[in-house]
Figure (cartoon, rainbow, N blue to C red):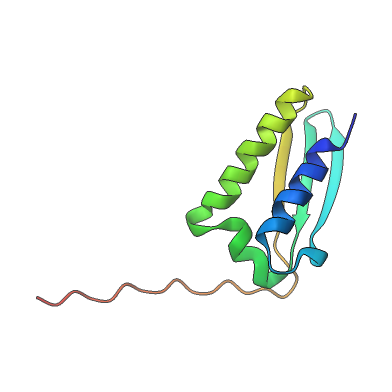
Length: 97
């Protein structure tokens, strides 16, 4: 089985993030299919996930298409970087009328 899915993901993510040299992908194959685990710098997490997860969802959709071409189920796990803290959501300003 080729690692086309891993190469595709690496190329895609390196084009999105600010620190492409820190992108690392682990590939594991089992009876459930292929699991790609993505590791990026903490500062790049927002770019990989996107607003409300839209970028991550799009990446997963593209990986599914790549998997179909090789008859494999491809799943993506985005590993949260060590020491990263999720920023609290900004509260919307109150509307005064």
